[in-house]
Image (cartoon, protein in one colour):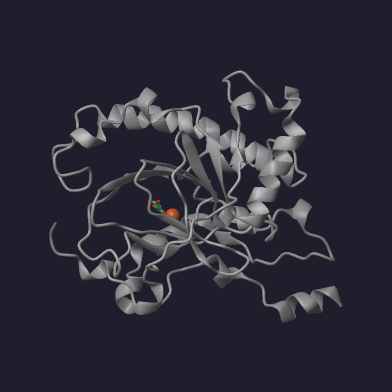
Length: 300
Ligand SMILES: O=C(O)CCC(=O)C(=O)O
Ligand SMILES: [Fe+2]
């Protein structure tokens, strides 16, 4: 175990707690009935129940599990054969690109189904979001967390919200993800559930839904014993999308809470800027929030 890059050391208030509280009650939602390649959402009898479950999960947690149809064994990601891990070595497994592409194709179908269910849960047509993704900025990240000599001081990924629309996270059995409970701000450890993905509501859904759903704040802990791998897929709309509350979800009583922002510009700013070194906050959706006073004026 080597030295720790000081960038991973957290200020006191953001360090992991020594006593871990497990997140109880993150819903486990079984999508198997609609997961077969030919199923459509309309012919599923259990659809109403499913849509309600997803709506509740998005509202109360911003995160839920989804039992896995697409198993990483099925896909056989050859990560562990990679000497030195995925992120550090030049010796990537020869078939890594193909495997990732195959995985991306399948996970994209799942992402669309989930967006369809989320649309229905907001009272919108199932295909309401599809147009945004005809061209996409979606991507997959391969996270490798090596064992860490000072896991009490460091985080593998610091606290953040995912800026994209939706995240579908696959992970191994080590565990390390923590989510911030909305009701009291408590950080809770998410026990890995075998054969399940973790689905996060991202910032774009928060804006599209005009805060009906809220993206979940999360972070990843490290440990001194075992390395960990996780694979998030981030579903993102076309770069030219102007992200703003959907017109069907706003009215005079419930005016838009955000000004439109251009997704491509947002992404570039996020990636290009050296916020950490400058010690300023990276670009966030709340920078586009319309002040309460302005909204009140509109109501008058
Ligand atoms: O590894 C994890 O559990 C979370 C990773 C994450 O939040 C991210 O890559 O955005
Ligand atoms: Fe994340």
